[in-house]
Image (tube, rainbow, N blue to C red; front, side, top):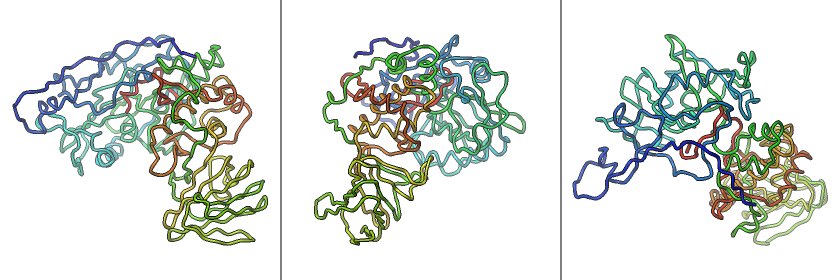
Length: 508
Protein backbone atom coordinates (compact mmCIF):
# COMPACT_ATOMS: atom_id res chain seq x y z
CA UNK A 1 0.00 0.00 0.00
CA UNK A 2 1.30 3.43 -0.94
CA UNK A 3 1.21 6.02 1.82
CA UNK A 4 0.36 9.13 -0.15
CA UNK A 5 -0.75 11.73 2.39
CA UNK A 6 1.99 14.32 2.85
CA UNK A 7 2.43 16.22 6.09
CA UNK A 8 2.30 19.94 5.41
CA UNK A 9 4.94 22.08 7.02
CA UNK A 10 6.55 25.44 6.47
CA UNK A 11 9.68 25.66 4.40
CA UNK A 12 12.45 26.36 6.83
CA UNK A 13 15.53 26.52 4.66
CA UNK A 14 17.43 29.57 3.45
CA UNK A 15 19.62 28.80 0.49
CA UNK A 16 23.26 29.86 0.50
CA UNK A 17 25.44 29.53 -2.59
CA UNK A 18 28.87 28.13 -1.76
CA UNK A 19 31.83 29.58 -3.62
CA UNK A 20 33.92 27.25 -5.73
CA UNK A 21 36.69 27.38 -8.28
CA UNK A 22 39.35 30.07 -8.66
CA UNK A 23 43.06 29.96 -8.06
CA UNK A 24 43.30 32.02 -4.86
CA UNK A 25 44.99 29.99 -2.12
CA UNK A 26 43.82 30.63 1.41
CA UNK A 27 44.57 29.23 4.82
CA UNK A 28 42.57 26.13 5.66
CA UNK A 29 41.08 27.74 8.77
CA UNK A 30 39.47 30.77 7.10
CA UNK A 31 35.75 30.93 6.45
CA UNK A 32 36.31 31.63 2.74
CA UNK A 33 38.44 28.51 2.53
CA UNK A 34 35.66 26.54 4.17
CA UNK A 35 33.21 27.82 1.56
CA UNK A 36 35.64 26.96 -1.25
CA UNK A 37 35.50 23.34 -0.07
CA UNK A 38 31.80 23.52 -0.98
CA UNK A 39 30.74 23.02 2.63
CA UNK A 40 27.43 24.81 3.12
CA UNK A 41 26.79 26.93 6.20
CA UNK A 42 23.86 25.96 8.42
CA UNK A 43 20.53 27.10 7.01
CA UNK A 44 18.28 27.10 10.08
CA UNK A 45 15.61 29.81 9.78
CA UNK A 46 15.61 30.18 13.58
CA UNK A 47 19.22 31.28 13.95
CA UNK A 48 21.61 34.08 14.79
CA UNK A 49 24.41 32.34 12.88
CA UNK A 50 23.65 34.53 9.89
CA UNK A 51 26.89 36.42 9.34
CA UNK A 52 25.48 39.54 10.98
CA UNK A 53 24.71 38.67 14.59
CA UNK A 54 27.27 35.86 14.68
CA UNK A 55 29.56 34.36 12.01
CA UNK A 56 28.05 31.68 9.83
CA UNK A 57 29.02 28.14 10.75
CA UNK A 58 29.79 25.06 8.69
CA UNK A 59 26.96 22.55 8.45
CA UNK A 60 28.14 19.49 10.38
CA UNK A 61 24.71 17.83 10.28
CA UNK A 62 23.62 15.17 7.81
CA UNK A 63 21.64 15.42 4.60
CA UNK A 64 17.94 16.14 4.56
CA UNK A 65 15.84 12.97 4.87
CA UNK A 66 12.62 13.21 2.80
CA UNK A 67 10.58 10.93 5.06
CA UNK A 68 11.72 12.44 8.40
CA UNK A 69 10.30 15.96 8.26
CA UNK A 70 8.76 18.24 10.93
CA UNK A 71 5.20 17.32 11.93
CA UNK A 72 2.89 19.50 14.01
CA UNK A 73 1.22 17.52 16.80
CA UNK A 74 -0.17 20.59 18.60
CA UNK A 75 -3.68 21.92 18.16
CA UNK A 76 -2.98 25.64 17.79
CA UNK A 77 0.77 26.31 17.80
CA UNK A 78 3.13 27.23 14.97
CA UNK A 79 6.59 25.95 14.08
CA UNK A 80 9.65 27.91 15.18
CA UNK A 81 10.43 29.91 12.04
CA UNK A 82 12.26 33.04 13.16
CA UNK A 83 14.61 33.73 16.06
CA UNK A 84 12.45 34.55 19.08
CA UNK A 85 13.60 33.25 22.46
CA UNK A 86 10.65 34.96 24.15
CA UNK A 87 8.31 32.76 22.10
CA UNK A 88 10.41 29.70 22.96
CA UNK A 89 10.19 30.51 26.66
CA UNK A 90 6.43 30.96 26.50
CA UNK A 91 6.04 27.70 24.59
CA UNK A 92 8.13 25.45 26.83
CA UNK A 93 6.79 26.95 30.07
CA UNK A 94 3.15 26.74 28.98
CA UNK A 95 1.54 23.73 30.67
CA UNK A 96 -1.84 24.38 29.04
CA UNK A 97 -0.69 23.49 25.52
CA UNK A 98 -2.17 20.19 24.36
CA UNK A 99 -1.65 17.97 21.35
CA UNK A 100 -1.22 14.39 20.19
CA UNK A 101 0.69 12.61 22.93
CA UNK A 102 0.27 15.33 25.55
CA UNK A 103 -0.87 12.66 28.01
CA UNK A 104 2.82 11.87 28.58
CA UNK A 105 4.33 13.15 31.81
CA UNK A 106 7.29 14.33 29.72
CA UNK A 107 5.12 16.61 27.54
CA UNK A 108 6.44 19.40 29.75
CA UNK A 109 9.20 19.13 32.36
CA UNK A 110 11.50 21.26 34.49
CA UNK A 111 14.68 20.88 36.49
CA UNK A 112 16.90 23.23 38.47
CA UNK A 113 20.51 23.37 39.62
CA UNK A 114 22.83 25.87 41.24
CA UNK A 115 24.52 28.14 38.72
CA UNK A 116 28.02 27.39 39.99
CA UNK A 117 27.43 23.63 39.85
CA UNK A 118 26.06 23.63 36.29
CA UNK A 119 28.77 25.96 35.01
CA UNK A 120 31.43 23.69 36.51
CA UNK A 121 29.82 20.67 34.85
CA UNK A 122 29.68 22.47 31.50
CA UNK A 123 33.37 23.40 31.70
CA UNK A 124 34.22 19.74 32.31
CA UNK A 125 31.86 18.42 29.64
CA UNK A 126 32.89 20.55 26.67
CA UNK A 127 36.29 18.81 26.31
CA UNK A 128 34.58 15.43 26.86
CA UNK A 129 32.00 16.09 24.15
CA UNK A 130 34.71 17.33 21.81
CA UNK A 131 36.81 14.21 22.47
CA UNK A 132 33.86 12.00 21.50
CA UNK A 133 33.43 13.90 18.23
CA UNK A 134 35.53 16.96 17.54
CA UNK A 135 33.30 18.05 14.67
CA UNK A 136 30.46 18.64 17.13
CA UNK A 137 32.14 21.52 18.99
CA UNK A 138 33.26 24.71 17.24
CA UNK A 139 35.72 27.28 18.60
CA UNK A 140 35.60 30.93 17.52
CA UNK A 141 39.00 32.08 16.25
CA UNK A 142 39.53 35.40 14.44
CA UNK A 143 35.83 35.62 13.64
CA UNK A 144 35.64 32.11 12.20
CA UNK A 145 33.98 29.02 13.73
CA UNK A 146 36.44 26.11 13.57
CA UNK A 147 35.75 22.52 14.55
CA UNK A 148 38.00 19.49 14.81
CA UNK A 149 40.01 21.37 17.42
CA UNK A 150 41.93 19.89 20.34
CA UNK A 151 40.02 21.17 23.39
CA UNK A 152 41.43 20.38 26.82
CA UNK A 153 40.65 23.33 29.11
CA UNK A 154 37.93 25.89 28.42
CA UNK A 155 38.44 27.89 31.60
CA UNK A 156 35.45 29.04 33.65
CA UNK A 157 31.99 29.42 32.11
CA UNK A 158 30.66 32.98 32.00
CA UNK A 159 27.42 32.73 30.06
CA UNK A 160 25.51 30.70 27.47
CA UNK A 161 23.00 31.50 24.75
CA UNK A 162 20.89 29.62 22.21
CA UNK A 163 21.96 30.58 18.68
CA UNK A 164 19.88 28.16 16.57
CA UNK A 165 16.82 25.94 16.86
CA UNK A 166 15.08 23.55 14.53
CA UNK A 167 11.43 23.88 13.49
CA UNK A 168 10.33 21.96 16.60
CA UNK A 169 12.21 24.27 18.94
CA UNK A 170 15.00 21.77 19.57
CA UNK A 171 18.33 23.49 20.21
CA UNK A 172 20.79 22.79 17.41
CA UNK A 173 23.53 25.30 18.34
CA UNK A 174 24.35 26.50 21.85
CA UNK A 175 26.96 29.19 22.53
CA UNK A 176 29.01 28.90 25.72
CA UNK A 177 31.20 31.89 26.63
CA UNK A 178 34.13 31.12 28.92
CA UNK A 179 37.20 32.86 30.26
CA UNK A 180 39.20 31.29 27.42
CA UNK A 181 36.90 31.77 24.45
CA UNK A 182 33.62 31.09 22.68
CA UNK A 183 32.46 27.51 22.12
CA UNK A 184 29.55 26.38 19.95
CA UNK A 185 28.08 23.00 20.93
CA UNK A 186 25.93 21.35 18.27
CA UNK A 187 23.36 18.53 18.06
CA UNK A 188 20.63 17.61 20.48
CA UNK A 189 22.34 14.66 22.19
CA UNK A 190 25.40 16.75 23.03
CA UNK A 191 23.23 19.55 24.38
CA UNK A 192 21.22 17.14 26.54
CA UNK A 193 24.48 15.88 27.96
CA UNK A 194 26.04 19.32 28.34
CA UNK A 195 23.14 20.79 30.33
CA UNK A 196 22.24 17.70 32.38
CA UNK A 197 21.64 18.67 36.00
CA UNK A 198 21.92 15.06 37.21
CA UNK A 199 19.07 15.98 39.52
CA UNK A 200 15.31 15.65 39.84
CA UNK A 201 13.07 16.32 36.86
CA UNK A 202 9.40 17.17 37.38
CA UNK A 203 6.84 16.61 34.63
CA UNK A 204 3.40 17.70 33.48
CA UNK A 205 0.81 16.47 31.02
CA UNK A 206 -0.78 18.91 28.61
CA UNK A 207 -3.49 20.96 30.28
CA UNK A 208 -1.98 20.65 33.76
CA UNK A 209 -1.97 23.50 36.26
CA UNK A 210 1.42 22.63 37.73
CA UNK A 211 4.32 20.21 37.52
CA UNK A 212 4.26 16.90 39.37
CA UNK A 213 5.10 16.95 43.06
CA UNK A 214 7.09 13.75 42.64
CA UNK A 215 10.09 13.61 40.33
CA UNK A 216 9.63 11.63 37.10
CA UNK A 217 13.38 11.02 36.89
CA UNK A 218 16.42 11.60 39.08
CA UNK A 219 20.15 11.45 38.44
CA UNK A 220 20.11 10.97 34.67
CA UNK A 221 23.29 11.90 32.76
CA UNK A 222 21.06 13.33 29.99
CA UNK A 223 18.22 15.82 29.99
CA UNK A 224 14.98 14.31 28.63
CA UNK A 225 15.32 16.32 25.42
CA UNK A 226 17.05 19.35 23.90
CA UNK A 227 13.71 21.08 23.32
CA UNK A 228 14.12 23.54 26.17
CA UNK A 229 14.83 27.01 27.47
CA UNK A 230 16.94 27.99 30.45
CA UNK A 231 16.80 30.93 32.82
CA UNK A 232 20.09 31.91 34.42
CA UNK A 233 19.63 33.62 37.77
CA UNK A 234 22.15 35.02 40.19
CA UNK A 235 22.56 31.71 41.99
CA UNK A 236 20.58 29.09 40.06
CA UNK A 237 19.64 27.90 36.58
CA UNK A 238 16.08 26.75 35.85
CA UNK A 239 15.54 24.60 32.75
CA UNK A 240 12.07 24.20 31.20
CA UNK A 241 11.59 21.67 28.44
CA UNK A 242 9.28 19.31 26.63
CA UNK A 243 9.49 15.81 25.22
CA UNK A 244 11.62 12.74 25.80
CA UNK A 245 14.11 11.53 23.22
CA UNK A 246 15.42 12.94 19.95
CA UNK A 247 11.96 13.86 18.66
CA UNK A 248 12.31 12.76 15.03
CA UNK A 249 10.05 10.29 13.25
CA UNK A 250 7.23 8.45 14.99
CA UNK A 251 6.27 9.68 18.45
CA UNK A 252 5.12 6.75 20.56
CA UNK A 253 2.82 8.69 22.88
CA UNK A 254 1.46 10.48 19.83
CA UNK A 255 0.75 7.14 18.13
CA UNK A 256 -1.01 5.86 21.24
CA UNK A 257 -3.13 9.00 21.50
CA UNK A 258 -4.02 9.08 17.80
CA UNK A 259 -5.09 5.43 17.85
CA UNK A 260 -6.98 5.46 21.15
CA UNK A 261 -8.61 8.90 21.17
CA UNK A 262 -8.80 9.98 17.53
CA UNK A 263 -9.59 6.73 15.73
CA UNK A 264 -6.50 6.71 13.50
CA UNK A 265 -5.56 3.37 11.95
CA UNK A 266 -1.95 2.24 12.09
CA UNK A 267 -1.56 3.15 8.42
CA UNK A 268 -2.90 6.64 9.11
CA UNK A 269 -0.38 7.06 11.93
CA UNK A 270 2.54 5.81 9.85
CA UNK A 271 1.44 8.24 7.15
CA UNK A 272 1.32 11.06 9.70
CA UNK A 273 4.88 10.60 10.96
CA UNK A 274 6.78 9.17 7.96
CA UNK A 275 6.34 11.51 4.98
CA UNK A 276 6.28 10.01 1.47
CA UNK A 277 6.93 6.44 2.63
CA UNK A 278 5.43 3.30 1.07
CA UNK A 279 4.29 0.18 2.92
CA UNK A 280 5.59 -3.04 1.31
CA UNK A 281 6.33 -6.66 2.20
CA UNK A 282 9.91 -7.14 3.37
CA UNK A 283 10.33 -10.11 1.02
CA UNK A 284 10.13 -7.72 -1.95
CA UNK A 285 13.36 -5.98 -0.85
CA UNK A 286 16.59 -7.47 -2.19
CA UNK A 287 19.08 -8.78 0.35
CA UNK A 288 16.62 -9.24 3.21
CA UNK A 289 16.65 -12.49 5.17
CA UNK A 290 14.08 -13.84 7.62
CA UNK A 291 16.55 -14.38 10.48
CA UNK A 292 18.17 -11.49 12.30
CA UNK A 293 21.25 -11.58 14.55
CA UNK A 294 21.11 -9.55 17.76
CA UNK A 295 24.13 -8.66 19.88
CA UNK A 296 23.22 -9.33 23.53
CA UNK A 297 24.55 -6.91 26.13
CA UNK A 298 24.99 -6.73 29.88
CA UNK A 299 23.08 -4.10 31.92
CA UNK A 300 25.92 -1.62 31.37
CA UNK A 301 25.62 -2.00 27.59
CA UNK A 302 28.81 -4.03 27.17
CA UNK A 303 28.90 -6.92 24.71
CA UNK A 304 31.58 -8.65 26.78
CA UNK A 305 30.30 -11.46 29.00
CA UNK A 306 32.00 -13.69 31.51
CA UNK A 307 30.75 -17.13 32.52
CA UNK A 308 27.25 -17.94 31.23
CA UNK A 309 24.73 -20.60 32.33
CA UNK A 310 22.11 -21.59 29.76
CA UNK A 311 19.33 -24.18 29.64
CA UNK A 312 16.05 -24.86 27.85
CA UNK A 313 12.83 -26.85 28.00
CA UNK A 314 13.58 -28.94 24.92
CA UNK A 315 16.45 -30.95 23.54
CA UNK A 316 19.55 -28.75 23.53
CA UNK A 317 21.81 -28.93 20.52
CA UNK A 318 25.37 -27.56 20.84
CA UNK A 319 27.22 -27.40 17.55
CA UNK A 320 30.08 -25.56 15.87
CA UNK A 321 29.51 -23.16 13.03
CA UNK A 322 32.03 -25.16 10.95
CA UNK A 323 30.33 -28.47 11.98
CA UNK A 324 33.50 -29.73 13.71
CA UNK A 325 31.35 -30.87 16.65
CA UNK A 326 27.66 -31.45 17.28
CA UNK A 327 26.21 -32.61 20.63
CA UNK A 328 22.66 -33.02 21.89
CA UNK A 329 21.64 -32.80 25.56
CA UNK A 330 18.42 -33.64 27.39
CA UNK A 331 15.82 -30.97 28.20
CA UNK A 332 16.63 -28.76 31.22
CA UNK A 333 20.34 -29.62 31.07
CA UNK A 334 22.36 -26.73 32.46
CA UNK A 335 25.24 -25.78 30.18
CA UNK A 336 28.05 -23.73 31.69
CA UNK A 337 30.20 -21.75 29.24
CA UNK A 338 33.40 -20.14 30.52
CA UNK A 339 35.69 -17.94 28.39
CA UNK A 340 39.44 -18.06 28.97
CA UNK A 341 42.43 -17.15 26.79
CA UNK A 342 40.50 -17.33 23.52
CA UNK A 343 38.79 -20.61 24.36
CA UNK A 344 35.27 -21.45 25.49
CA UNK A 345 35.07 -24.19 28.11
CA UNK A 346 31.74 -26.02 27.98
CA UNK A 347 30.55 -28.16 30.88
CA UNK A 348 27.42 -30.17 31.68
CA UNK A 349 26.84 -33.00 34.14
CA UNK A 350 27.63 -35.53 31.43
CA UNK A 351 30.23 -33.85 29.22
CA UNK A 352 33.10 -31.36 29.25
CA UNK A 353 35.04 -29.95 26.31
CA UNK A 354 36.66 -26.76 25.09
CA UNK A 355 36.79 -25.02 21.73
CA UNK A 356 38.28 -21.92 20.19
CA UNK A 357 35.50 -21.83 17.59
CA UNK A 358 32.16 -20.08 17.46
CA UNK A 359 29.27 -22.36 18.30
CA UNK A 360 25.50 -22.35 18.70
CA UNK A 361 23.11 -23.51 21.38
CA UNK A 362 19.76 -24.31 19.76
CA UNK A 363 16.64 -24.76 21.90
CA UNK A 364 14.84 -26.92 19.34
CA UNK A 365 11.76 -24.70 19.24
CA UNK A 366 11.73 -24.07 23.00
CA UNK A 367 12.88 -20.97 24.81
CA UNK A 368 16.52 -20.76 25.83
CA UNK A 369 16.96 -19.51 29.39
CA UNK A 370 20.11 -17.54 30.23
CA UNK A 371 20.35 -17.83 33.99
CA UNK A 372 22.72 -14.99 34.82
CA UNK A 373 21.95 -12.19 32.37
CA UNK A 374 19.97 -9.42 34.03
CA UNK A 375 17.31 -7.52 32.10
CA UNK A 376 14.73 -5.03 33.36
CA UNK A 377 12.08 -7.68 33.99
CA UNK A 378 14.25 -10.63 35.09
CA UNK A 379 17.71 -11.96 35.82
CA UNK A 380 16.87 -15.09 33.78
CA UNK A 381 15.79 -13.84 30.34
CA UNK A 382 14.33 -16.25 27.79
CA UNK A 383 15.21 -16.20 24.10
CA UNK A 384 13.60 -17.73 21.04
CA UNK A 385 15.68 -19.32 18.29
CA UNK A 386 19.32 -20.06 19.03
CA UNK A 387 22.26 -18.26 20.62
CA UNK A 388 25.74 -18.07 19.15
CA UNK A 389 28.76 -17.92 21.47
CA UNK A 390 31.90 -16.22 20.19
CA UNK A 391 35.27 -16.43 22.02
CA UNK A 392 36.93 -13.04 22.61
CA UNK A 393 40.01 -13.55 24.78
CA UNK A 394 38.86 -13.82 28.39
CA UNK A 395 35.30 -12.83 27.55
CA UNK A 396 32.66 -13.98 25.10
CA UNK A 397 30.04 -12.41 22.88
CA UNK A 398 26.47 -13.73 22.70
CA UNK A 399 24.37 -13.33 19.57
CA UNK A 400 20.68 -14.19 19.43
CA UNK A 401 19.77 -15.66 16.03
CA UNK A 402 16.01 -15.46 15.62
CA UNK A 403 13.21 -15.17 13.07
CA UNK A 404 12.32 -11.52 12.41
CA UNK A 405 8.72 -11.88 13.62
CA UNK A 406 9.87 -13.66 16.78
CA UNK A 407 12.46 -10.93 17.31
CA UNK A 408 9.65 -8.36 17.25
CA UNK A 409 7.74 -10.29 19.93
CA UNK A 410 10.55 -9.33 22.30
CA UNK A 411 11.06 -5.81 20.90
CA UNK A 412 7.58 -4.32 20.68
CA UNK A 413 6.68 -4.88 24.38
CA UNK A 414 10.08 -3.45 25.34
CA UNK A 415 9.51 -0.30 23.28
CA UNK A 416 5.78 0.47 23.74
CA UNK A 417 3.40 -0.14 26.69
CA UNK A 418 0.59 -2.64 26.16
CA UNK A 419 -1.86 0.00 27.41
CA UNK A 420 -1.43 1.97 24.16
CA UNK A 421 -3.61 -0.63 22.43
CA UNK A 422 -3.26 -2.97 19.46
CA UNK A 423 -3.51 -0.29 16.75
CA UNK A 424 -0.63 1.72 18.20
CA UNK A 425 1.32 -1.49 18.72
CA UNK A 426 0.91 -2.17 14.99
CA UNK A 427 2.62 1.16 14.33
CA UNK A 428 5.44 0.13 16.65
CA UNK A 429 5.71 -3.28 14.98
CA UNK A 430 6.08 -1.79 11.49
CA UNK A 431 8.54 0.86 12.70
CA UNK A 432 10.62 -1.70 14.62
CA UNK A 433 10.64 -4.18 11.73
CA UNK A 434 11.66 -1.44 9.31
CA UNK A 435 14.37 -0.13 11.63
CA UNK A 436 15.81 -3.62 12.01
CA UNK A 437 15.77 -4.32 8.26
CA UNK A 438 17.42 -0.96 7.58
CA UNK A 439 20.27 -1.72 10.00
CA UNK A 440 20.47 -5.27 8.60
CA UNK A 441 21.10 -3.94 5.09
CA UNK A 442 23.49 -1.19 6.20
CA UNK A 443 25.76 -3.74 7.90
CA UNK A 444 26.20 -1.41 10.85
CA UNK A 445 27.56 -4.16 13.12
CA UNK A 446 28.82 -6.53 10.42
CA UNK A 447 32.36 -6.50 11.83
CA UNK A 448 30.98 -7.85 15.11
CA UNK A 449 28.95 -10.59 13.43
CA UNK A 450 25.43 -9.31 14.08
CA UNK A 451 22.87 -6.87 12.66
CA UNK A 452 21.48 -4.97 15.67
CA UNK A 453 22.12 -4.55 19.38
CA UNK A 454 19.56 -5.26 22.09
CA UNK A 455 19.82 -1.69 23.46
CA UNK A 456 18.60 1.77 22.47
CA UNK A 457 21.63 1.98 20.17
CA UNK A 458 19.41 -0.11 17.91
CA UNK A 459 16.14 -0.90 19.68
CA UNK A 460 15.42 -2.50 23.02
CA UNK A 461 15.08 -6.31 22.81
CA UNK A 462 13.79 -8.62 25.53
CA UNK A 463 13.62 -6.02 28.28
CA UNK A 464 9.95 -6.71 29.06
CA UNK A 465 7.79 -9.83 29.02
CA UNK A 466 5.92 -10.72 25.85
CA UNK A 467 2.19 -10.01 25.70
CA UNK A 468 -0.73 -11.12 23.53
CA UNK A 469 -1.64 -7.63 22.28
CA UNK A 470 1.86 -7.02 20.94
CA UNK A 471 1.87 -10.47 19.31
CA UNK A 472 -1.49 -9.72 17.66
CA UNK A 473 -0.11 -6.45 16.31
CA UNK A 474 2.99 -8.18 14.95
CA UNK A 475 0.94 -10.90 13.26
CA UNK A 476 -1.49 -8.36 11.77
CA UNK A 477 1.41 -6.52 10.14
CA UNK A 478 3.53 -9.59 9.34
CA UNK A 479 6.38 -8.68 7.01
CA UNK A 480 5.30 -5.07 6.51
CA UNK A 481 8.03 -2.43 6.31
CA UNK A 482 8.28 1.17 5.12
CA UNK A 483 10.41 2.08 2.12
CA UNK A 484 11.30 5.29 0.32
CA UNK A 485 12.08 4.86 -3.38
CA UNK A 486 12.33 1.13 -2.78
CA UNK A 487 14.83 1.33 0.10
CA UNK A 488 13.83 0.54 3.71
CA UNK A 489 13.69 3.80 5.65
CA UNK A 490 15.57 4.58 8.82
CA UNK A 491 12.38 4.42 10.89
CA UNK A 492 13.37 6.65 13.79
CA UNK A 493 11.02 6.90 16.74
CA UNK A 494 11.07 8.32 20.24
CA UNK A 495 8.83 8.52 23.28
CA UNK A 496 7.40 12.02 23.53
CA UNK A 497 7.53 15.28 21.59
CA UNK A 498 7.09 18.80 22.92
CA UNK A 499 4.41 19.36 20.29
CA UNK A 500 6.38 19.03 17.06
CA UNK A 501 8.64 16.41 15.54
CA UNK A 502 11.97 17.50 14.06
CA UNK A 503 13.63 16.99 10.70
CA UNK A 504 16.37 14.38 10.92
CA UNK A 505 18.97 16.76 9.47
CA UNK A 506 18.44 19.05 12.47
CA UNK A 507 19.16 16.21 14.91
CA UNK A 508 22.02 14.13 13.49
